[in-house]
Length: 523
Image (cartoon, rainbow, N blue to C red):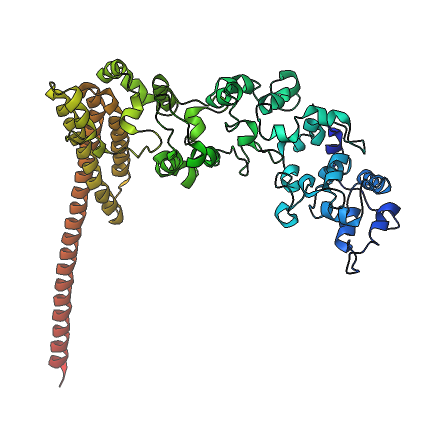
């Protein structure tokens, strides 16, 4: 199963060795540069020669041996590989692996078995994309074709164990039940995985067997159910941190939606209550606050499908599990809810906690307007059915909403005041800091709505009111200082103007006296 390639080829060659002194390539390689295409043009050129000369000597030796053994079928075959512009390490692996070499040769392989750098252009098997394969996480760790298919990368012929390892083509494509166990030969073996990625869990298979997908595939023999390659791919498997991975956080919604958003594919599947399984989850998620944070803002901490449903153990979250999923991020809200009266009522009715008010895939950003006691509002509609004999319920909802709107309105009024003071040259930093305290208090007060109790709610509202009062005091003091400065400036200007007038009059009087004195002394 493992067929580990000599990983040492990846190591030990820090820098390319210099080219031979005569500047020539090995004879068997040099001969390939003489081959021409149908139009009489050389297939390999100066760029190819320059690339080969930069390779380490041991890699050139591998290429020469491949050419001599005809494993490298000719110039066109070599050209396909050189167009990949491989690193010296990757080139060493490719030219030492007869499986890759053979299946890259367009002259000897049928298109269904041909590894191509551009399957669309060559009209070959799209699953055999050579560029994707060379970026595959297995290949990069030293595991190549033989790791899954069996055989030996050193032999120039296929051995019988390769065919014996796989179900026949017509079976393996229609019956996918073999795939999980096949991948688990390595991924469920802790001792083997320790040599590649010790942090990777090895319980994926056991989790998968208990998942909804696993039950459908392995117990009910439904090969439409998702299995390993459905989410991870085949030859181009990448880790979840890669932007090109199908299981990168931002790619997961589309990966799940490939099946779950396809109405035709999902036809016939039902929820536990017998109703058809919906197919609008992906579109709803994209419009939700979580979807926008993940897909538009690039917040990789925002939840995706697997955050709530799980990965290999994917299941519809049960009522009792929904709140635990939400608490992963919104822990404080969950703590407040645990001590509320609603907790008991929700458990009695078997209602999901967070989902009851906020929804599931189409969760919108929570606003103060959400707290509505109107007959068709969130709180009012529920109270009309379940608390119609308790007017305090709607009164509490009104109190919550009016308090929050009042605090928000105060902040909305004070912030422009602070900005105006700053523009007038006053020290507005204390005012702005106080407004931030008010903003934080509003956040805490909103969170305390989940206590569904005026006492618990007012612990946050009190801080908000105190911050608002403090801010108003600071603004008032700043305005007084502004008025003091303005009045002082006016007095100063008035005094200076008065002195200027007096000085002007004095100068004028002195001038008059001088003229009179001149007139008196004149004969």
